[in-house]
Image 1 (tube, helix red, strand yellow):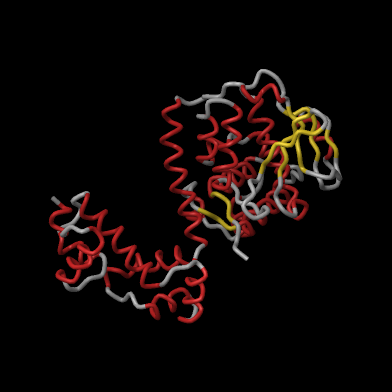
Image 2 (cartoon, one colour; image 1 turned 90 degrees about the vertical axis):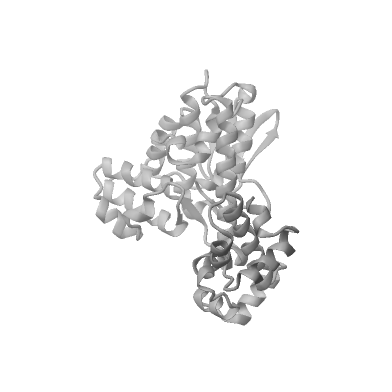
Length: 335
């Protein structure tokens, strides 16, 4: 099973919030196994296991059993994840919802049915419900707390009236159940059949655009790159490319060497790549192609330097490979 991850910015925000409530930062890091360097870049990924440990340590060490609810109430998603910035730059609430489904995993990855979006709208008896479809939500109900609190309280900052009219959660009422009604500002049903919010449908067309719209395109491009990076990190191909990037210039690019660095046998690596309908040789060849284009098109390196950087000891062999890739010589491409 693939390990789910959380954006480091989200984890760092929670750690700071817990410290402000009296928890000791070093003790929190020790309990969840996250060092300072693990959280220094908000686009870095931390494991869901570490995040769960952080949330539960924060509850204990801060003395606030409802800290996930309170963090969601206070946090501005745009300050901890690019997903929040994109939602703020959306034209209206309908577009913001689309972007939440598109890029929300950059904040927090969850398990859903294959290919399904995390959130969906359901029209039932004339009422519009926003449903969180993540699998096994009661195993970590704090994520429901922080998610719903962030959505409701974040939207409260600019909407003219309440977004959520009623909240349903599948987990039992905790000892701090009264805090739900205060934070959400609406009736709450525990032990419900779904995790969902009954919403004011008339707000779907409400304008958002808290950032100039041109910012939307810039942020979306960056977020798309982060999504691709996240997806690649979970594929055998992506892991092979990551290892190859470290050793290409050294020339040690055999399948045996890369398999050893990944801690698997050659046969296991072969099977994993085959399952993704690719071979080691194809991954290596296409990576060299992409890198060579990058080095030469930006005039970042000479032809001979590029040959070395992508793992060719013989510039002539590199030139032949480049001609096969592009139909041009490296010199022609470099201009």
